[in-house]
Image 1 (cartoon, rainbow, N blue to C red):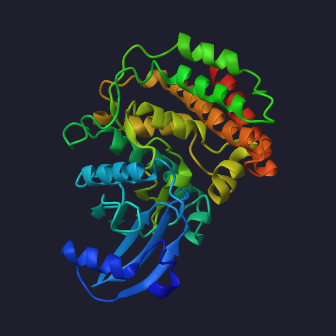
Image 2: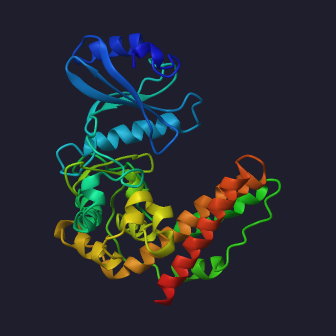
Image 3: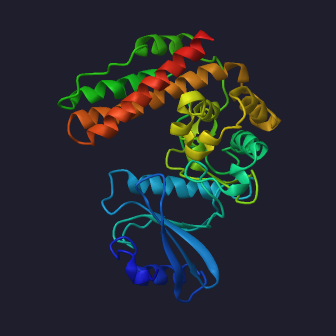
Length: 353
């Protein structure tokens, strides 16, 4: 694809060339220009210039209220992770000036040689259960590498609000759920176990925890795997990143882990193929990195998994509420409401066990 085939309202390559030249990046024509599908509404375009590969990331054509701030935060985190050993794209350059590219903040990062296992599964991985088992363990190990990073040492002090992070979770998300009542046509949440799960979370909150960098949406769909083996090539989609309790990321992984009848729905081809480790093995794999678990109580992992189910269910219920109001497809809303009920059933099952 040629640069002129990309909507210039999204990426004006003449403007981009001048900006890259000003940043001292290699010059020359843009080659191998390819738009990429992402896990969000943000725009991703891969290209080569001056013998180097790049991926440009910017917001959608119609920028949302916080899009540019989110992109600035992503770029800051990727820069901070340089040299830490966390598998993530490397930041090459960032433009925080909204006036350069039509109102959009953007950044350039390294391309990732890898695949999303919830979308496709190469023959090597599809044909060997031991490879898939190791893929699962490596999802936890990649997360433990993130949990081991001292956010202050890499320049992220003040990036989030860790004080009171756990204490405000239940009230924060119950308020979010209550806000959906303002949508016309939404009858209110019909979620069995909602109040019981909320009360259990408040009653069993861990007394102590150690702040660190959180990805904020850590599950298999936000991982790229190496095409040559079970290694995690990169953790992607950092738009929810903050400073909080990294064990909630592990809880998120446990809450979304493919199992039983939901395996394919939660993890596509990888979930359908099976052979993945159990959630207990994931916790053990995370615990193998002592600098990630120091000062963190892994015996509280059921609480974090329940909190993840609680938050995910409420987030998904938001689309159901918008669908009731005619602001999202009704079929999508009904499907996500079903997933919400599934997450609350999973939460109740974890509590019971």
